[in-house]
Image (tube, rainbow, N blue to C red; front, side, top):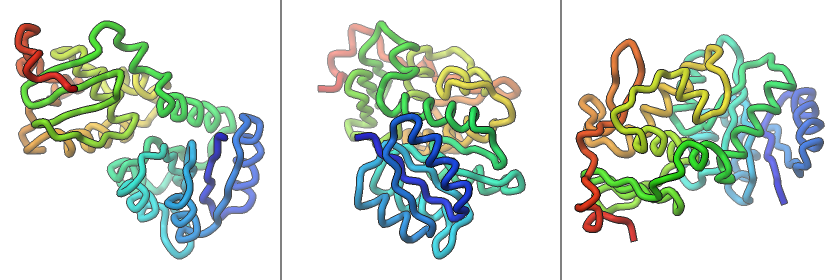
Amino acid sequence: MKKVLIIEDDVAISKLLEFHLIDLNYTIIKAFKGDVGLEKALNDDFTLIILDITLPNIDGIEVCKQIRLVKQTPIIMLTAKTEELDKVLSLELGADDYITKPFSVREFIARVKAVTRRFENTSGTKKIIESNNELTFKELSINIDKRKVLLKNKEINLSPIEFDLLVLMASNAGKVYSREKLLELVWGYDFDGYRHTVNSHINRLRGKIEENMVTPKFILTTWGVGYKFNDELKIPSHEKSQSSIE
């Protein structure tokens, strides 16, 4: 059963979201306070969580942070246009996407479909790369079918978006991607002002695989253009057997 948790204190918005999600065949659970929503999120399994930033008792930023400590359930944050810092912070804490209020129903449905597709493993990764099931670099191994990443033989816990972003760049190591192109290929929609989405996920991914965020060795910045994965760390095919994921 596909269930969506809506944590939103505005009753009108909550009802609107519920109406359109029911049309997509989701079962809806609602909470109007941050602490209640957090309890529901931690004690049940959901296909998606829609989380407003401004909530009574516990704000959405803290709710997102607490959920991410134990679960990788996709989270879409609802923010106001003036909450620029909150958009960045929510993404840095692990939210998969955000939608700025007021938003159109069409945009909301598109975002829901894009995020849930990715979590169900039917999104970009399999379309982006069909050839290599395993990508091997110095200290880093990626198994695409198992969606498993090892860093120095220790498994790294990545969200669905973080994994897809890593696979896209690692499978095309050395190629520079603009933020616009990454948003199109990984998130599945146009740039349209959502620059924080890419930057924040790159930062979060770096925080998990880089030893030093100031001087990263895997994900490199090409100033004025975008990002690329360091192709100099790729292990030649004849050496891969020693570094493969079992």
